[in-house]
Image (cartoon, rainbow, N blue to C red; front, side):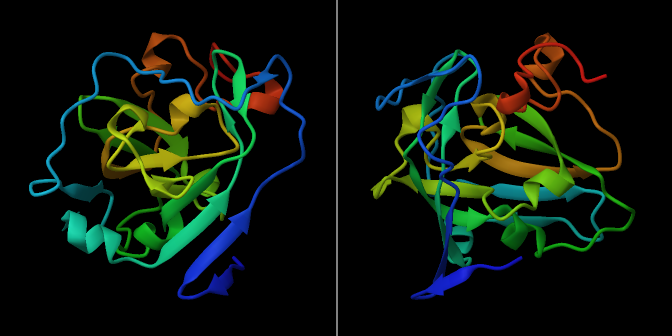
Length: 203
């Protein structure tokens, strides 16, 4: 993967113009969409666990995590409730950078993202390793606020926003695909907005 290195960070531009996916309307607002109240996360006790089919599990505190190489991604954000915010600048750590911290004991095909508050969502590993996927702690130059997933959320621009899980605290590497929180409740396993994969399982 190629990144443009700028002052020790990388920047990826994923803008595809001012066109939203089918069935979406464009807004400059950033609505708060969550199931339940935002969990209160103390950075002093915050912990990020990497587990599953790995040779050795890894746990990071906030200082460890924010000390990893930084990336900046300009990308669109598409909510399944039909709004799209086309201009967003996310800053954090690329998923691919975090994945470098472990070795796999078996072939891995999928990942479950785990979060404070009990939320989870599934993704295939290949998609998560794309260069626009990151764990973000800043949005548009400001620390990510609690309602929008702070201190840390996953950002997957090419998927509906429920895959961009809020309040992330772990990665589980797997060799099968399993449904997460919303997928168990009827949402699509893949969630491609350009294919309008809102509900139901893939063929």
